[in-house]
Amino acid sequence: MPHAYDDQNIFAKILRGEIPNDTVIETEHTLAFRDIGPQAPVHVLVIPKGPYVSYDHFAAEASEAEIVDFARVSARVIAEAGIGLGEGGQGYRVISNAGSHGTQEVPHYHLHVVGGRALGRMLAAPQ
Image 1 (cartoon, one colour):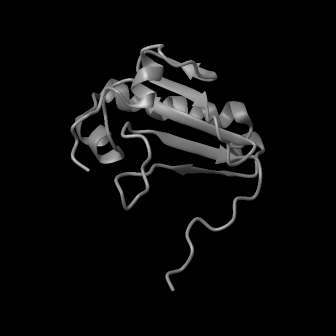
Image 2 (spheres, helix red, strand yellow):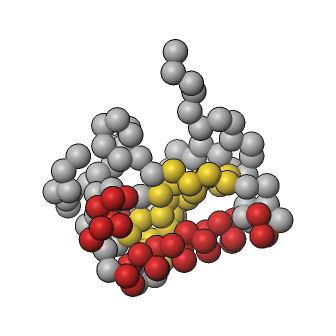
């Protein structure tokens, strides 16, 4: 997927306040909100406020402040949900899909934080 950013994607609209969300944490550079179709008891999306398409785009072009803030908000989401190992939780999964092979649905970089139950294997072995 090229790094051309589509400012009409649903997350861009959420960031502009055109579509409501269930905010968990919001900072200068990052927004974390509950997924509208949760796949586990905890399913929070963490997105940078900048126009990044994928993890590699974000990691290569975001400022240090954006990257640090994103990482710290992700850690807060895990801690506040009580799923982190340091919080006595049983664990969690973080997922970022990119491009067609990664089944990315929204062309804005986002991290899924999923937990609250046993999640099973991440991928099935090829057949």
